[in-house]
Length: 260
Image 1 (cartoon, one colour):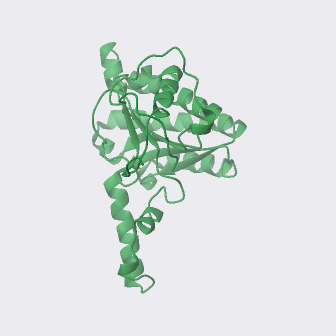
Image 2 (cartoon, one colour; image 1 turned 90 degrees about the vertical axis):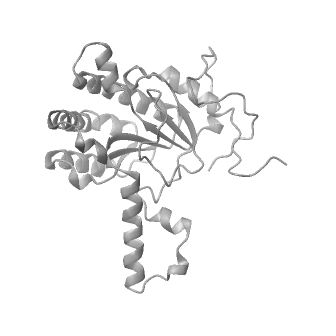
Image 3 (cartoon, helix red, strand yellow; image 1 turned 30 degrees about the vertical axis):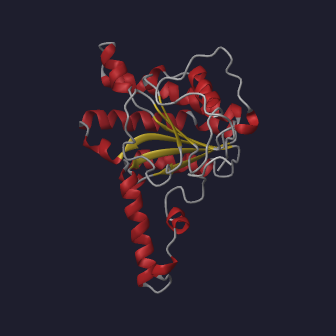
């Protein structure tokens, strides 16, 4: 985890201020940024459009955010693309979302290869349609040697389900005699999560103004800095991302400690 030793200047629990200077310190970037991409439906409703149009516009924002993070040097970017709860949505919307996901995986493959981005997926990906899984695994295989940035897509993902899965794996190890119960530590649990080989998020961004975690990375965000912006995801821009990162760099991260 990176530690920001600067005086806290403002809260990030609302829209960041709009400084004209968005120069950020490349030596003080969050290693891992996670994003709850919210507001596609409301963006479409405000424009009297079908919800799917909001998702289509939101996919353009995904492209912008991925490119920006790669350009400035973010090492890990995790995007909450589809939750376990999203399976409850109307079948027509789910089908459209899966079609958009498949299109994204195919269309962005070359860019990920050209820009040294490794694609990874976290969640119950076995629940995705077979054709989507095929394209997902193909992109992951083609980009597996890339080491410039990890792009995590949280697909059919739920934080509680992830923790349950980790506990089940540990319980099986104990039952088989390969592990003693007293050996269970936070680090051990972390290793059994989908993100077990990655650092926990330093910064979590949620768009659309909703003040919820929405079952996202529940274990991993224990000491994550959180920014909630009122901007709907399709309107989220490179400039706002840079302002948030600048604001993050002005925070003091103590991880439960006090200044000395």
